[in-house]
Each structure stands twice: as C-alpha cells, then as structure tokens.
Image (cartoon, rainbow, N blue to C red; front, side, top):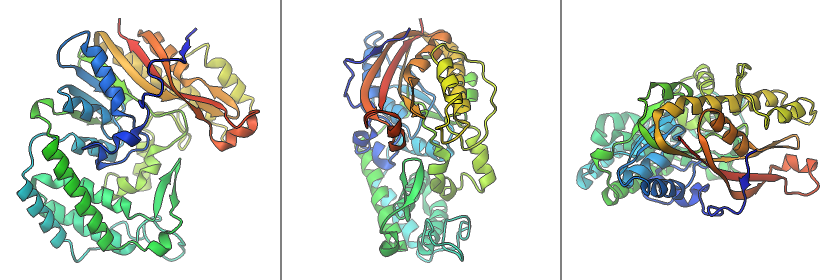
Length: 425
C-alpha cells in the first residue's frame, strides 16, 4: 500500500505553479498555463547534487515549453527533453538558445522585418475553419488585418531575420495570439467578452511583436547560456523516443506529465500550431493527437492495455457501472493513461544511472463522483517498472470542477497535486 505524505516538507512550496515562473527571464517568452515552477527543478537539482558534486545529466520526457531544460542550463547542467507538440517544442528550443546576441544587429534586423512587412500579404489561413471572418461565421479567431500582417511578418523574418529568425518567429506567434479574439479557458478556446469592440488591428500586432522581441533581447543579454549547456530537445512521442536514448546516461528526471483531466493540448494550442505552419489541416491535427499520451477522449485510442494494479481495477469497475459520466470512453482512457505511464517508466529505467531519481508532479482526478488517486497509481506503475518509491508528497489540495460537486456532500471534492519521488536502486 502506498501512503500519501500529507504534511510533507514540500507542501505549499510553489512546485506546481507556473505563474511565478512565467515572470522570470526567458521563461516569460511564452506562457504555458500547464507548466510547473522552477522551484521544483532547483530543489531536485539541489538534492541530487548533495549525492554527487558534479554536473548532472537530466532527462525531461514531457518538456512543455522548457521549464526543466532552461532551469538546468541556467544552473550549469545538461538536459535532454522530449515534447510531442512541435510548436511547444520549438518554444522550448528558442528559450534555451545559447551564446550571445549583439544588440545593434538584433535591433537592425528587427526594424528591417517590421518595415518590410508593412504591406501585409494574403494568408493561407483565410477562410479556413474559424481563423478569419467569412460568410456564415459569427465569430472568428483573427481579424484579417492581423492575419495578413502576420503572414508578411513571417516572410520578412525569413528574409531579414538572420541568426535571430527563430526568436522573431516565436515573438510573431506570441504577438498574434495576443491579438486573437479568443483565449484559452480550461479545455477550450473561448471568445473574449469584448472582442468585437476591441477590433484588433495590424498595428496592435506590430506593437506586441516589437515588445516581445525586445524582451527576448534583454533576457539573452542578462541571462546568457553557455554553448556547453546546449539543451537537446527532441520532437516526438516519449513512448517511442525514450527507447532511442543511450542506457545508463541520466542522473535525474524532473517532469510533469499531462494530467488525467481529458485536456487535448493539441486542440487548445491549435492557433499556434497553424500559425507556425506546424500542421496544415485537420488530418495532420488528428495525427498529432494520436501521438499524445492517452489522457483525453478526443480521438479513439486502441483499447489494449497490459498494466494492472490493485489500486486501479476497482476504480475502473466502478466507472464502468457509472451512468454519470459525460463520455462513455472515460474508463478506457483511464486504463490507457496508466498503461502509457507504466510503459514510459519501463523504457526509462535502463536509461538512468544507479541511484538516479525521478521527481514528478501530477494531480488526482475525479469523474462521475469517483476520485482517482492518480499519484498513488503512478507510484505503483513506477514501482512495477522497477523503481523504488521514496515518497508521494501532497503539495496542495484542490477543488474539483463544478460538475463534480453534485456527487459530494460539500462543494470541495477531494483532489490534490502531488510530488512523487522515485529512485533507480
């Protein structure tokens, strides 16, 4: 039986919150709500450096926008990361750029890009889905003047961006999203209440582009990263890419996998995926979804699983009899999610050195009034894969989504975020 440490020394230590991290140099270049805190990475590094006073080789199988590799590089450690979403991976690659930037040359290139994009140009996204206004649509993501100026920005960046092309491209995508008529809200994009009155223009886009680009310049100048600590960020499915890594290579894993909350991250980051030309149509979007961890029901997954747990089986049985589920594939998703995590642990184990640790943050879930102790089941999956459990630390208690309240006597259904620490003994 796995015991939760509710009075952990890590309780309320801000390990789970990206908000404070999002204001830090380089981290602030792109906001990922689902990200976690640099405090977690720093603590994991500190605790493992006490065992070996040397540079660490760190692995991050769910990179996101790069909290782990960026924190590692800024502290003089190596990190190899994997991220399935190509736009999110690109963001992490830009954030961890090494070397020095020349202020005058950067600003010259920036001005050339802005001047040579002034006329705007037709965008391939015009008329596609809900990206721009068209007949029959009452709402659209981008006003045409914004999208056309973005299109010309991309062309000008390719011609005049020089060695700063990637930074300018990220700044342009972030600027475009700043001028989007919708914003991310939970599992979906929801239109801003004032979007029709606001009427974003191409001038708004350029103002945001310049602002974000100059922030990048400032952060690289004040927080440079040595070429020695260049972060390798692989684009792909962790379930496959981990097997290609060299055995006995990593001292530490610091990560936070997708939560078991049915969030389709390829959908809520759809604007950036299309703007950056990482996907071109809905067929490619579906193909990307099929590469993600089986933590949502937006596509039909293969139902075959091999992982079994005495903690999981009664929960799935209970959910299979539950008529209060909003989707009847939820029990399949839950089984598949833990099967994926178990397989990842099995593949990861030979890649780690003896004594290496995994520090993993995850949240529990609730469906149809049934609380799923995700942290304890993941601990079981890691243990079955050969890791030794050092502790499941409760970081904070959460309140479930409103639709779950009807299943409980109070309006505070039991959820929590936890830190799981495991060792490769």
